[in-house]
Image (cartoon, rainbow, N blue to C red; front, top):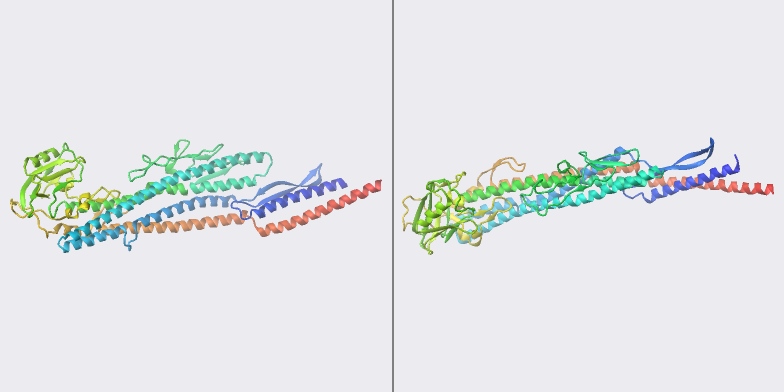
Length: 578
């Protein structure tokens, strides 16, 4: 072997070793860098005309177990989904309070029950009426606030979807950009290891937002699609499209109230099941909708129960006027049977005038107005809000109503209930439940007793009495007794008290929050295990890298010694020739 050949071999060894040292140094420096994988400088012998002529670094590669990487990608998606669900369910649980708390939706109902009992046993004092109205207001506010919180969470979920879609799009476009760089580098024979690390990091980020599947072709390009097969990264980036709703109420639903999550015009909303976006869609369109449905079931039952009883009664003293809560117009048809009684009550609580109306003889609301106004003792009209208003013709008299045996409409409601003349609560569900504004302003308007139903009631007879708390007693019985609840929001139909059903809502939410928290912990542990396994396989070991540096330094020194020796031999040869 000539000295020149030997020198060439030694020089290549120096160069290859220097490259290997550089790679090892980079490994050591990035040992704690998230997503960095160990790089290896692969050496191969160089031959010329069949003769060994040195060594070179043929490539710098990384060793990543694809199975472990897929486990990390899948676990990342599951962990994000579980984490989001757990966070939101904790907020739902908090919105309802606790069964043993002092301000839960069950507790405020119990407070109403207690105050009704006090009002009934105390004979209907003004102080007890005021306390009862306050308790009713607290109950309505607590339920409506819980509803508002649920809708606020739905709005937040919708907003979070838009935010996460933007973040997912960043990952999608970055992967597509890295694909181009990797393909170009691979074609040029350059290392793509660091670029692949960056792409894997973006893939994990993308999987945290929605479930994905992926593959890498022979050119080095990665194709990514949703779990359902919608392409996100092909030859180009296919980004998601979404616009958050401007406002969210209980009536806002997908697909009419919320826009679609789409890719290239294809709606993929219903197919996104995992990742943070999948969790948010489930929360917004299912989980939180169920919670609202449960609250509405509670609220509507409370409203119906209270108003059905309160409209059988009257306040003491008699109100100066009665205004209904139902919206009607004079031309509305009115199909009814039985008798509705109106009585003008004087300052001594005696009957000043009586009007018994035969409901079967009326065809429209206008007929009812005409009948009342024709009596000369009462006036009736529809106010600007579409509510029936009735007063005594003599402004010094109050007015009281007794539904008697009247039945109006397809539901067969008493006439007072049909028009809402003595409604204590207003609204149709949890979002708008409230105490009648007139009663909130004047607690004495709370119906406590009943107007005489005697068939021979005449002018001068006692109409109402101050100690009559029969309606309050009926309300107390309704709150302590059993009510029938239809199935709603995943809760089975039930026969329980109003507070009992509220407790069921609370306990169900608490159980769901606990289960979500446990699942989040499990998903987090699974991701940690998968990440640790991948890191152990492809991560950097400082001990190994330190040992490798030592070995390479020795190899470098040996190659350098050979070069030095060869230089001396070259010098000696030249001197011999001269």
